[in-house]
Structure formats: structure tokens, C-alpha cells
Length: 330
Image (cartoon, rainbow, N blue to C red):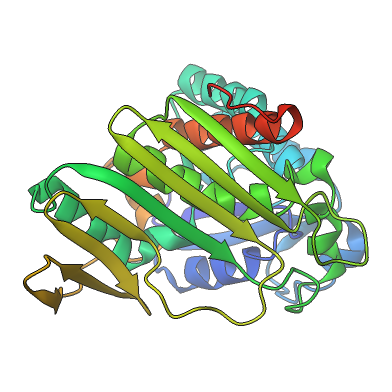
């Protein structure tokens, strides 16, 4: 293997791809060598040094790669990852892992068979507050955990300026796996799964409450039942402005842990204080993926594909619950 890892990009329709490209370009041990997407979207990638393909399958046949960034719609991303892994190419797949748990399981099987890295990139993985929450829970200072809540979202993909190549598939349940329930309840699902484990059941409501155009849903609420308590996950494409309350929040028998504007605060009843921000290392997805390629580490926490696949199971159960009106076992 050369001194630099040769990395390809499969898909440019996931809006997070541009931030990933910048991180990977900045890493001294990475050489981005190729990208695949439809011709119209491919024109947005101005790097003249990249080999450009209009078809990801042709790119995988033609290039010798040490790793692959997978940033397509949630249906196609799973297909790309499965094919790449079968060819022995490690993959970093942008969140969410897949449109449903069946596709996620196929990805897990491909990764297991190949023995190659499958890393699921959730942007919140690189925030100090998430590391801080995990560390505080591990310390046991909160006592018995009985409730978790997390709310993620904005006023909508189109409303915040996402391009049609991105919201075009976000608005299709077949390609996204839902609307806001897939896009943003997925964050809460993967975090609650990592911190608290799998719930016993999921009850959910979803609907298009504010849009005058068709979307699978623009707001969703999921209630997760655990043997020891509960979790509430909200995903929204309907919120203009944002309330200043803590988010996420974890309640324990000894106190409450909350995040306010990225700062972690602990309230023990008799005293309340801000916790120091822990170091996140590796500090970004490119650094982490390179360490996986070197065999230094494996994807852990919410980057672990098994955790991300369980998040897909939680969202699948939520969608089934919203149809049946009953709680569903994930």
C-alpha cells in the first residue's frame, strides 16, 4: 500500500458529503482519487484531479481503492456499501445507515463476510457533549437512569436551503426511509441505543403538519419503553426558531444532565454546574476512518454499524406503530 490511502466517493446527493470531502482532503494520509454521481450533480465537484464517473458500479470496477465514502440516498448507499465491501473495500457511510433494518442487516452481513471496516458517520459523534454524556453515565454519578429525551431538526430541508438533489430523495420514503422520523429521530434512536440499550417497545406519532407540499412526515415523536424507564425522541422539519431548554437531557435518581448550546450541565438539586468539555479523539471522521484502515481501532459508539442497525430497528418499529396506533417491539 502506498503512503497515502486512495479513497473514492460514491454519491454526491447527500448534503453532508461536501463537509466530508473537506475533512478528507485535509488529512495528509488520504488521497481522494475518484467520485461517482449523475452528470448533472457531478458538475458541482470542481476538483480537476478526481477521476469522475456517472455510474458508481463502473467506478468500483475501474479503480483500486483503499476506502470509499458512501454519500448517496439511504437506499442506494446500502447497495453501494454492500458491493464495495464484497470487493474488499472498507466503507464510511454517511448517516443514516440505511432506509430500513433489512438493508442494514445486509450491510452487516457484507461487512462480516469481507472482514473490512464499515463505519457509519453521524455528525454528532464529533461533538464533545456526546462524549461527555457517555463519560458521565459511565461514572454512575447520576444514579438510576429513568428518562432520556432528545429533539433534533429544523424548519425543513428545502426551507434551510438544501439542494433539490438532496431534498429530492429526503422527501421520498422509498429512498429515505421516512421524512423527519428517519432524518432526525434517527439521531435520538442511535444515541439512546448506545447509551441505554434496546427498548422493549416503541410507540410513535408522525404526520405532515405544516407543509403545503407532500412529504412522508414533517414531525414525529417516538416513545421508547425500557425496563427502567423511558425515552422520548423528536424529529422535526417543522420548527422555526428553537426553545432554549436543554437538549438532550438525561434524568437520573441523583440528578439531571443537560446540554445547553453545546455545553454539558449537571444539576444535582442542591448544586448545578457546567462540566468541562472532554477531548474528542480522533476529532473528525477522516482521522477516525484512517485509524480503522490502519487497524488501530474499529468503529465504536454510534459509529458502530451494529448500533446504527439497531437504530434502524427502532425507527422501523416507530413507523409500524404510527400505522397501527399500538406500541411495537423493535
